[in-house]
Image (cartoon, rainbow, N blue to C red; front, side):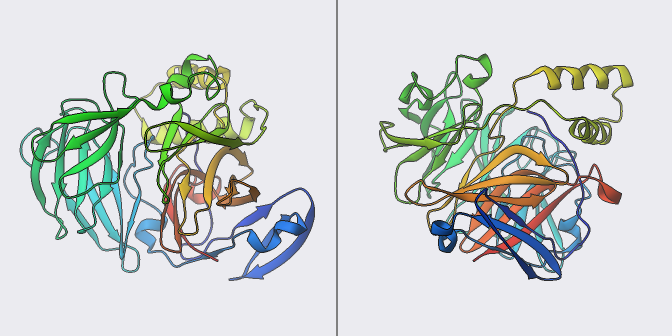
Length: 371
């Protein structure tokens, strides 16, 4: 999956721009002007984002977050990320910037070789999968490594963790929804997300065999999103499709600015990469069919669905918002290249690659209150 990078200028406050094609008005807040466009009938339903303070240590991260990371967690008062360079789990206080770390490189107790995904449990502990060691480790609320459990398979994502079990994407092809015991590692397959709608959900392109997102719905059931087709289906607990929605977004080639941002980010993330190898990599990326939804959608407390898109415009990413009835409310913009979203209560947190300026090539976290 492609990555780009970018910047935004303020460590404690960032602006947001909303777009839609019908009408336009301008609002001003926190010294930032945001353009808002929307159909008049949906104006009251379109959410607003109020920037919230973020510690400088989170505004510009001094460690490398995995390129495919959407395992960003807002665990008040800390945000949890994976430091890929040290194979550690890092919790950073959103106000003070104080860091707490757990784990290290290795295969012994409390050690990781490929940490992620991660998920928070109701008691404040965190589950950390290790895709290389094929096991799950519990990190306690006081940020210490707890017991580990065998997984017996590759794990792609966690859902609905409880005290005794967790749902995960895994199985032989990594596309089954599996209930995994946290006592003995036993598994029970629920359903195969791709098999839930094998006719209409996905293109025949090979990449669609992996570019899909399964999202747990607050009201029960699941969203199944095709990253390439921009189609989102509603599935019940058994995986049976009941409705679908999406947007008609034509594919776009990689622009010259995006290629430049990819080059900057790749040079920072892989300093040993030769110029010739980097050029070949970028040529391959540019030749691929553009993914429409590059990160899992997220639901907020009101049941609205926030969909990160591939559309990087200047120094901001377009994010689409759908309401509880799957109606398209409009598009907003977040600074930089958005790599992942997370919600908790009325807050929305974004992991971004900065675009342009002195922060070019670095990553950071943005934090908003949903209004």
